[in-house]
Structure formats: structure tokens, C-alpha cells
Length: 186
Length: 381
Image (tube, each protein chain N blue to C red):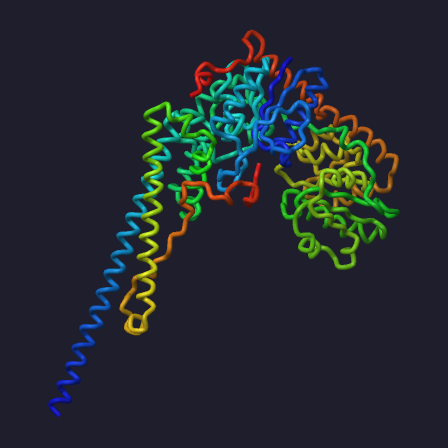
């Protein structure tokens, strides 16, 4: 009789400890997502700033300057879906960097070299930050899908984090070579 | 005069700006000027002798969609070489604020530069970071032309300064002769309409209401409707017994548009507003179609107050039915209107418009030097 009560109490305590460990783990995952998101936002903003600096530097021809400035403005303005606008900035940067002889033409100026290096670093940072963020989102969403978490509503009111998918490569991919892109105008 | 024209968009892709430059170049050549056009072009594209290719345009996100533009140092150096070798008296750039060849031409050249603005682009007010560079390139423009009042307003608001208004020309000779579409106009007569079906200001609804009274009185009469939009939806507003007498062509090619204009006894322009010039009207006049049009101020001016076409009260279907019915019954009146329209449209013909443009050239050329490569650009910056 006493042994039975002891067993039930022990099981309840163990269960309680387990549940609170799971809740804590979920909480840590949510915190990780938030931190990764902040890092991602910071990296996107940094890339945007360097793109604007390059556009207004007077080092590029005016047409390329206008393209970069417009794309950077669009990404900041938030009038369109963020992912689309940031992808467009990537494509505009790629179009600028993809010009034949682009680096050679700019290499005469020390300032240009500095800006290009910084932009490449910023673009690479976007790539890394996005990877880590999506990683955290995947882990969090997997944890949220577990039966115990769902039954006991351990995730509370926190919304499910969403993946952030953009085209962030600075190197031209083969399929981006032109002819088949949709919505051609002009 | 030696004239250098700069086209910002790929030559072989259909578009209003390209069409304008082609018509202008050919009209200028006919006026015995020496003309060279530099334009982005695909590698294997056939080009007229007066076009110098500046290489392929690159698809790039711009203004929320993907545009094919020519930018960068390579394009700039091609434009620079063209300017240096061309020895132009005047450089005429089109759409100078678009990040393409025209902007590059303003950057690399100095001397008499004329610019034509085609589109009203409210987004240009966001030119911020690149503005100093853009301004210094655009400041070199000595005269600006706008093709519409809307384009002129945008230009004045966002770039400052003023512009002369010279509307698009109509290549009259392209409209004069064409075979009617098979089976048209038909023994019962036909009325034509050209324009977007779902744009209320084009006024298709007014014409359909007028057909409700014209149709039953004239059993053979048909409507020929050309333009993009949903024909089925438009038909829902028409009595069922009249529906099979309305033919929708959908969006038509340039060639079929001309044929359609030659396929009707009466061409109807029932617009209820928003037309600054009425290019459709001018095209119908060039084709010699007898016209019934709403008495908008712009239409009244183009039709010489009713001498070159019947006018009816704007949006008044009953008045339209009366005017169209009178014309359908009177072949002599139709013939005299057709002749008057062909005569009146001559002032919108490209040779006339091109002469107006040449007058602008002459204003900026007198007293200044020729077009040269700018000193800063020559250093390769």
C-alpha cells in the first residue's frame, strides 16, 4: 500500500521533471530562433548599407548605380514581400558583379577594392545567417510537432517560426543567364 | 544634320519606345538627315542599317519586375566609342532616367543633348542614393520632350525644369491600305471598336447599349471588337438574341489591327474620358474609316470639330445610336468623312512630327559645339 503510493508519487515527480525539461528545451529553441533572426536581420541590413554606399560612391556608371540604389531601397521599404525584395537585391548585385571585367575596371581605386571586399563579406554573412536561422527553425518546428508538446501545449502562444528563403548567392548560377526569366519588360 | 538616337531597350522586342524611335529615325532619314541609332540587341537579331548594336541587354530586377537593360562599364565604353566615331551634331536620348544606354549616353557625352520622356513613372521620386550621379548626367540635357501631358507632369515634378510636348506620330502610310478580314464588313454593315474591353473609360459599354437599339432595327448589322479583355463577360450585358452578332477578336497584331480598321463601315470611339490625344482615333483616321466618336475635347480637336468624323454626347448611348444609324444609311456622307479624316490625320503623320523634333534640335544646336566624349568619362571613370 505504502509502496504503491510511493511509486505513484515518484512517477508523477519524474513526469513533472521530464515535462518541465521538455518545456525548457522548447523555450531555449525559441530563444535560439529569435537570436538567429536578429543576426539575419542585421546581416541583411549590413549588406543593404554597403550596396547603397557602393551605388552612391561615384565609382560605378550611373546606370548600375541606379539599379543598385533602387533594389536596396525596395528591400528596405517593405512595400513588397521581404524575401522577394531581398532576392531582387541579390540579383541586382549579381548583375553588377557579373559584368565582364567588373573587378578589373574598379581595381584601380583603393576605395572600390575596400567596398567590394566588404560587400562580398556582407553577402557571405547573409548566406551564413540564413542557414543558421533556418536550422533553428527546423529544429524548433520538429520539437513543436512532438505529441507531448502538442497535448500539453508546451509551446504556449508562441507562433510557429517560419523559414526565410531567399536567393542570396553572389555568384551567377547557370540558369540565371537570362533568356528564360519570366515577366520580361522593355 | 548628323543625329545620334539612343534606344534604352532591346531593339527587336516589341515596345512603344522602340516603335517610336524606329518611326522617328526613318522619318528623319526621309528628311535627308544622317541618323545612327545605338540600341541593345540580341546577337543574331536582324537590324536595319542605321542601328548600331550595343550588345545584349541583361535581365535585371527593376521597378518590381524584370527588365532587360544595358548598364555597366562595357556598355558605357560602347556608347563612348559610338559617340566619338559618330561626329553628331545632336544626341537624342530616349527615357533618360531608366538605368540603361540613354543614361550612359548622357554620362559619357557632352554637347547638344535632347531627351524624350515616354512614361509617367511616379517611382522616380525615390531616386535617393544614386541621385547626385543621376542629376549630373541629366543636367547635361539641353532640351526635353514629353510625349504626353502625364509624362510631362512627372518630369516637371521629379526632375524639375520643363519639357515641350510633342505627341507620338502615326505612321499613316502603314494604315492606308489593307485587305478587310474575311467576310467583313458583310451585307448588313459593321461597326468597329478597338481598345481594352475591361477599361470602362474606353466606353465599350456605351457602344453595347447603343447596339441594343441599333441591332433590332438592322437585322444584318454586326459589331467587330478588337482588344484585350474578357469577351464573354462583356456579352453578359447584351440581350441573348444579339450576342452572335458581336465578334471578339481578342488582342490583335499590328497587321490585323489595320485589317480590322478596313473591315468596318463605321469606326466607333465611345471613350468616356482619360484620353489626352486618342492614338486609336488617329490610326482609324489614317485607315480612312468613317468615325463616330464621343465629343471629348481631345477628340473634337483631332476630328476638327466634327468635320472629319461624327461627334456624339459623351456616354450617351441613344445619341451614339442616332449618329451611327445616320452614317450607316448614308454612303455618301461616309465617303466624305473618310476623305476628310485622311486629310486631317496628316498633321499627326511622322514626317510632320519629325519636323517638330528637328525644330527642337535646331534650337539646341545653334551656337554650341558638336557632341563630344565628356572629359571625365574619357578618363575611364
